[in-house]
Image (cartoon, rainbow, N blue to C red; front, side, top):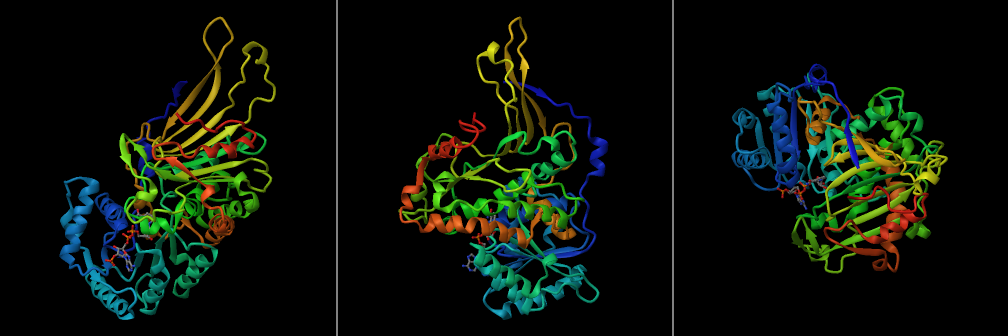
Length: 521
Ligand code: NDP
């Protein structure tokens, strides 16, 4: 297949006007669960990077909390190691950053610990002039979200605004509950003291540059929107393939599985961005309104015939990047008879005018051959194949691929004439590389999410109605596949390093497209 690049004008002038706004309000960031993986691998490196790029407010402080009895000094040393592991050995400006780092041991079940935290914050806020603006980041096991939010509120730490200062915000990571009922319970706990505009339900997928670009691509160009519907689109494929297994997170993953881990949140957001209507303005509430309408339009899943619409898999032993890796059931901490799915492919429909009858194939899995996230829009074939007699072969239809990872690019395939005397078609692509001719700063997803939280911008965060609609769609599926008697027969093994269970093709056969979609190289 031939490739033609898209030419992009030099972006230097434009880039300056696109730089991130710097939060002007001072802020105390309190990380609960600061001894954990998320803090080391994502949060602290993101905060340090923001600091070095002048993305944090002038006055800020960071308090890490956990049950582990660390001192400030131990915390600082651990965080320096964690940041070095991500950004390399040279930690210029570390000293001035680390002077704002503190640690407080905390018992999540004891109200006195939170009263103690409140006193510590008051003292530190006087020293660092952060004026009562507080972000509480729950980097904790999800079972602690509700109780911790209640304890924070009981200790007076949930106040929306304080005299002479700002207010509290609370940030939490997926999973937002494990089903509809638990997500509602969590929401109730959160809202005991925090109002919706203080709650930031993070989905780091949404903060990826290329994911944010989906809306720009769709709604800042006039040529795609008229064909972005059932008349021209045959099907849509959304996939997020991971090469990694479950790493050290067996405790979490065993009770979660791929549907809760990926579909309830990230995959639903990609679906919403692909399918939503244009909002009247690019504002958080309006964008989230349109996303909620997409979730409302999800056709209820055919739970009594779920083989037609869902394929679940679990990785067996195999080879990934030339390295032998164990089966899921052989991973440390995983039950040797576990029925937890690590792969799912699902066919869903949206019952609305734009998308009636267009299948959306959504798939995600662990230990697949390549890490790859993309959305493929498959257009319908030409209505009349006038070259049929000349070519004797079907003409490939156009396909648009919104690459999110690792190919951060947009690719459009189309047909052209092969040079030469005979009439021959060939498929060529037009490529736009997201970073082409751009040399300005690029924010990592957690940097963007933390920055938006400091700015109070909820555009890239889940709203509770979306969470509930997503669970309302998924919960019957989870019930059906977790309670069916022949659960094991519906869980197809696939070799680690493969493309998933072959049974996934079953979903595509019933679609307009007879073969596998978006063939993998
Ligand atoms: P960890 O399992 O590393 O736990 C974080 C901290 O919570 C631990 O360091 C521990 O600190 C404390 N903790 C663990 N178990 C308990 C318990 N039973 N009771 C009280 N405290 C406990 O989690 P992660 O850092 O990986 O993730 C944090 C949250 O973010 C989770 O909800 C996770 O689902 C979510 N998340 C994580 C991602 C990641 O990449 N890691 C990605 C997306 C979401 P101590 O013992 O010191 O109290």
